[in-house]
Amino acid sequence: FNRLLPASRDIARDKAGHDNPAVLAAAEAVKAADAAVRVAQGQMLPQVGVQGQAARDYDTDSSTRRVDSLQVVGRVTVPLYAGGGPEAQVRQNRELVGVALLQLDSARLQARSAAYGARVGFDTAGIAIRAASEEVRAGEATVEGIRRQLEKGIRTVTELLNAQQDAVAARARRSEEHTSELQSRKIS
Image (cartoon, rainbow, N blue to C red; front, top):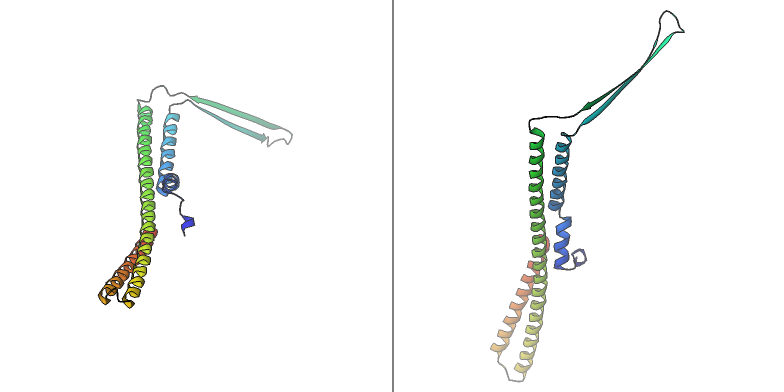
């Protein structure tokens, strides 16, 4: 399972800043808003249109006579005055690009923060599990040592029971840490 996780917190943060679906969607929204600006700017440019038509007619009275015609019409439209509408549309779309860029930055920050926090939680859970495992080993060694000392008459049964109770509590904490690690894996 660990091989599927990014190797470090920084890698997780950077990967989330590029590959998170919310970041990718926000980046596409920026592209769409930028395209809308270009479309609005295009309304203010001159437009050129060409239309052509070719025809061939045969005279119905004689089969040898035919009439060929070719017609080409060119049209150039230059916007002189549009009342400021296209310029306003360009400005509005530029503002929408700014909003989309802010949303992209926000999505990127949120994704990076969430990935970094999840990785910190995962790393912390691993450290806590290792510490709890060491505590269990120490508790078991203490119980064994007290048991040997009890056999020689150096320790009492109460001390052995207390050490066993501490070892059981350490095992319970280790189990809780494993459970919290599994939950953090589900979250991240």
